[in-house]
Image (cartoon, rainbow, N blue to C red; front, side, top):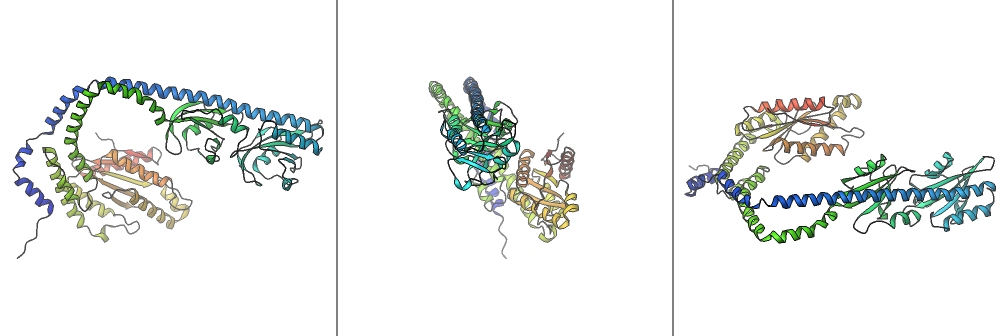
Length: 543
């Protein structure tokens, strides 16, 4: 009669217990190892002085860069303001000349040509009469003469009947991205005759590019200009002109009319040291920034000189600490990485390969293998049809209870997240229950996408869901909540139906008596998240 072969984890532990090395390994105590490493650590206390000096120089370099960028941004904002005022002044002179004989075509042509060619302020200049029709333009475009204006910037100038600098817009005739600077023309009796205006092509060279592009630093710094909507009016990379960068916090600050400096990330995720200042006449903003990494490269040579002076003793000490630290920490690190992916097919083999040369690692390996075996046996007995919610495909309340019992019996620490959809009742009332069901399915799918392979996802009923995160402390569970919240923030659950979540987080530790206490604590935290205004994460307060 054949007998069933014991599981591999049991065979591994049996071989370990029968090994002659086990009594010796059990006498190795991690605390003694840490004490020995601490004795070596006192030899490197002089690094405190080095670190303090480096930190001070780093902060000084960053502050100087921020101050310089702010000063330069203020200077360029003033120059931009001067450029725009000069452009309006030029147009004002022409408007005064045209006011005496507006219908004289030769006079119109002389003024538009003069404005285009005298100092390259404008790429083109046109005159519009009181009926809103283009009566003259330089460079000549005969096909637009007599046409009714339709571009947003020109219509704004026509309706305002006052000196004006438009927001960037795309011209209907040339499909260029431009700003339009205009000045109204009035007769000597005060009658509105039309306006004269100049276009500045944002993707081509002109007076604005001469002002902003000539002065930027050669040390990695660069500047850009945004309008009131956060669209790029000027950038060293002309292909980016017209791009909206409002999500940049520095752009948001300068749009509010603030002058200052800040460490921030640009829209492409690069850390920057930024100075900013507004252009007073238009509400635009000038931002000067330099990559933080490029700035800190200036510290490289001083740091290298200092290290060379202390290198011999420093290297010997660091190598000793590095060797011992890796020797001690690597097994714990390997076990931690394995514990985060307990559902992998070769988990037992990976655990067996972890070097177990001191007591704590041996005990941890034993606990993980025993717990893994127990949890796998418990969870494998769950009936899929009885424990699955038919709408979302997640575990139902019964499945969650079975999982909790398995975790409790295994005495494995875990975190629990209780969440529900903010104002879900109003979605059902407004859009109907079919849309509500679609929202629930959408949430379940996003939970699957953001969850790790070992996480357990449940729907308790209605719009209340639970996530069980084995081997995860509450601070890491908060990161899982943030991933889910970010996934929901960038996509609507249903067309015209965005959703947000309130989430409560608690953890079950080995010293806790009942897993139900963790669920209750998570419910209390969820209630606190709702009371705090919803769309937030609250962590249970442990006593």
